[in-house]
Image (cartoon, rainbow, N blue to C red; front, side, top):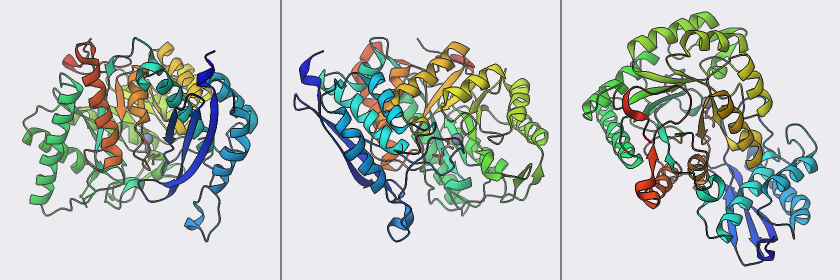
Length: 436
Ligand code: PGA
Ligand code: ZN
């Protein structure tokens, strides 16, 4: 062990996220003078089995959303135990924090406290070695830039739009590089803005930077996206396809899927699958995440059996980046891909373990932001390090989303000729997206 990478200080700060709610930034200092920080994101449509985000619950301070308890847990409980340890002992320190917490869901110290430390630690260790974070976490093999899922129309819990479905995304998988994918996405986003404007619809944006207009139906959202792709000069299905995250737990109630906002009535699990099947036939859809609710394991398996050979079926709320649920999902063929959110499980090490399970099963995996984000771009480096070739990090505006895209542009530039672009695992995309 090199003595200079020993931890000298660990300090948390209460900062504000992209929705203006408190969250944590943790800074780790090493004996060699390295200082590195990481900030923790926060979801709105959270899965019920996610690790616990510890909030103060003091109604008179930030409406109960303060994080001073989690902050104290970093500064007073975790920090003293970490001083003097080697910052590169990531797995050991992550394990120590889990043991110190002692609960199955990090309810005592807070997953926000633990993850802030875990990520800052990785960054500090990378910085001390003068290595970019993606190379430190991913090794010499880390060269693949991810296909972005760009959330251009927001509904559900992320906007007051008329859409029951939370996310309508575009995937520029036909681009030749990540930089080209950004151009495809941005041009389509601007074309969509013009289309909405011409139709007298709002161009105000939701939590993840997608537009949030009052549309007549969820179908109209897909039609508008196809029109925007064409207007920008691209071919739907070849250059750019559609990915959906209905986040169905948010409109599931008493055994029924209630498409209330769009006035499409109540549906059973089987009727939802039939709806998705008809959409997959009509629109260039390549991926559906949380098409069904988090406890509808049977429905998920039925949907994967029916559509899983054609499109990617992604589990988010049902799997919550938790190796325990991913194992069950693999044995029951619940999905063929997992959404990966570091704060659903709470440490870098356990997130890597979740991804390892996906790889072994031949599943795809999508590294993802949360709807409440910060300017931290950790997941950009993390996505390249893990090499799955997919990231979901919002629309083509709002700097907390662009921070990740801009970091990926930097990484691609740094990798130069060695950079690859495209999905590397799971269901293959139409045509030439499988670049080396
Ligand atoms: P959340 O939404 O961050 O609000 O949970 C993102 C998602 O459902 O994928
Ligand atoms: Zn989701």
